[in-house]
Length: 141
Image (cartoon, rainbow, N blue to C red; front, side):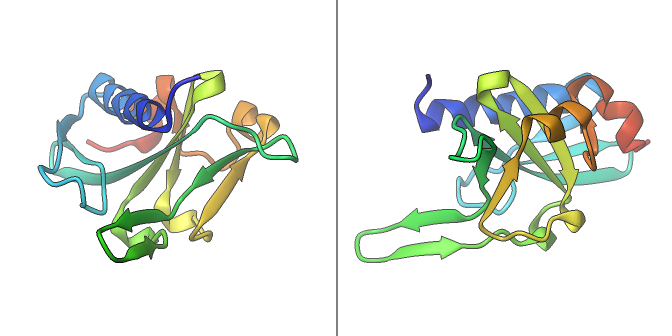
């Protein structure tokens, strides 16, 4: 099992690889405090992508992803709830099954956590795409 940081890095890189394989160019913010992890560009289309990763199942057997961001400084712990307007695509990397799922952010109603059951991930229900089908499903020129 990887550390949380390594799982997040693998998720970010997996999502970038999926977009690059689908013909997108990737632009990464210099600051680590931006609301999206990268911007994918293809032709005149720009997509802001936020990547979330998980490596554990909850007590109900679902993979739980933290959508909120927690930022600490010397005196304050600030929690930023997920804002669907801050990105166009949410990429979710599930480390134990090495699976990457994509969702349109406008369809996400949760602001703190989201759970994925094995059957949900396997059936790709309401997902934008799975890795191998990204280009066709997003249909951006």
